[in-house]
Picture 1: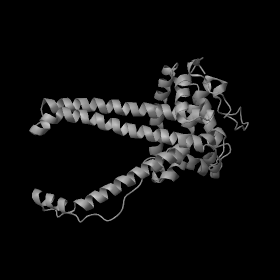
Picture 2 (picture 1 turned 90 degrees about the horizontal axis):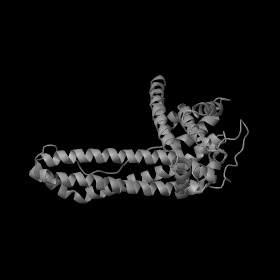
Picture 3 (picture 1 turned 180 degrees about the vertical axis):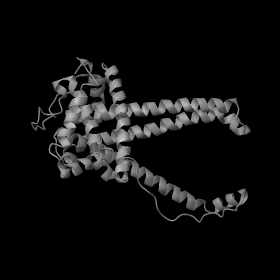
Picture 4 (picture 1 turned 120 degrees about the vertical axis):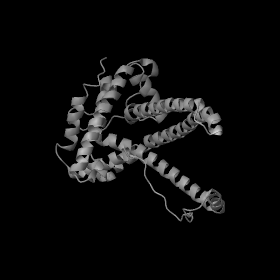
Length: 314
């Protein structure tokens, strides 16, 4: 079985043109843009409330400590409130993002602009993905803190001595290596989930853990080289997409910086990337068919029996 990251480029481009421009439907753009906005929404939110009185700028060290001691309860209260708000917003964003991924997939696969139907139909899969990603986020935070603690312990003698010696230098090197490894692991995990697991969950109607098992055993384990090339191609396309987005921002007087409006204007980019990933997966055979033949509308893609883990090629 030949799995190529190059062959799906043409079909993905044709699919994007067919969905968005043949014919051009402004309402469909706004609906699909909303789904793409949810599927790609990032961090956001703000904080409010009363803050403690600002300390005068001319306070010395002792007076500053006295000021903080006098306002400690208020500072702790505001800190707790801000922390809880950030956590709540993060959880909400992950939930909306997880549900939105299936809405965008559904719109591209079925060539339609719909919100209510896919929101309801893929509720179980979206919520399963949300719980899975929430756990991964908490694990990532713990791992990051542990990795950050090791260089701190290494540098502790120089910290106590208030010098920058061999221990501090070693800590910087170790910390940099840990940071690179951590970021690389997060990027690879995000690539695996977004490119392989989510489409598997959509097609097979399975929960996140089962989707990971099927995706790894049937799509990645025996095809690591094509999967790596696919990731490289997406990086290259991502650089091109960023350039297009920058030029579009200049041409539209920064309209693309508006979250939802920007997604609608740049909608061909997420539609192409999604169609590209799905077209890549369709190379694994008829059991991985997402799009109906030609222009025929067919939404029954949920009755495929999951491939066993030891089957090799799907």
